[in-house]
Length: 193
Image 1: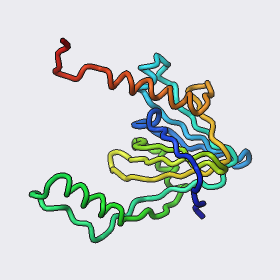
Image 2: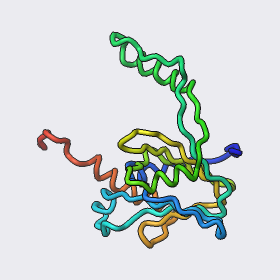
Image 3: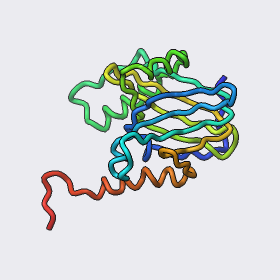
C-alpha cells in the first residue's frame, strides 16, 4: 500500500533527530494523528532546556504507518582483506543495493519501542511539497542492532520542541545550531595557535 513519491522535495531532519532516542509512537485513531516523541539530551544541554524536554512530531490525518526490516542480498560477500578500501566500499554498496526492504508488523514494532531497549534515530527525512507528506526514519535498536525503516504518510506534520511548536525551517535550524557549534570545537589533542 506504499504510495509513490514523485515531484516532491526531501528535507533532512538529521540535524535534530540524529542519535535521538525514540520514546514512543502514540496513535489517536479518532483524531487520525500519530505522535512520535524523541529524547535528544545533547540538544537539551546545548540549548539549556530541562532534561525532560522532548521533540514531538505530530502527523495529522495519517493515512499510512509502515515499518520495514532490511533483508540483505544472499549473494553478498565480504571483499578480501587485500582489496583497496574504495573498491571494497563500492562492492559493499553494490551488494547492499541488491538487498530489499520487507514489511513487518507495525503494532509489534510500536510495542517493542515501549520496552527497555533503546531505539535511536540514525537518519530522518521529510518529503513534502504535496499531500501526503512522508516522514521516513531509519531507526536502530540497541543492544540487538535491528535496523528498521519507518514511513509515515500524513496530510502534514507539525514539529514541537517541548511545548513550543516550530515551523519546519525553525525546527531544522534548532538542530543545526548544535552541529555548527560541535564542528567549531577544537579537536582533542590539538593546540590552538
